[in-house]
Length: 118
Image (cartoon, rainbow, N blue to C red; front, side, top):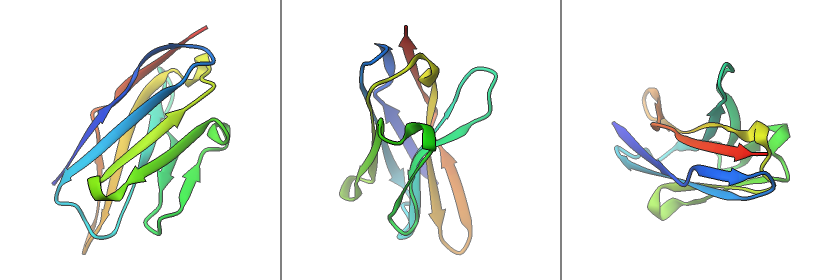
């Protein structure tokens, strides 16, 4: 099992910034992918940004240039720096970890609320 602990959400005005963190612990795989998704009320969960199993980054088009994903591999932690926030960025942000072992397992954090006021 892998446990994910997210932090950093909150309320911010439009144009502001927030930094999310997600720390993974437990059965950390030697090959993994890790990143962020979000879900707004009444909408499906969507990709924000991830590190792929190969170590490259993948961003949703609408987040490119505003959001930056980074990581500290020694701490099994990923970060999401969100700048120029818009009201439409309001959502619950979820951390996702995929362990590539003899089977592929996906884990989700509990989610952290980000609210952007206009």
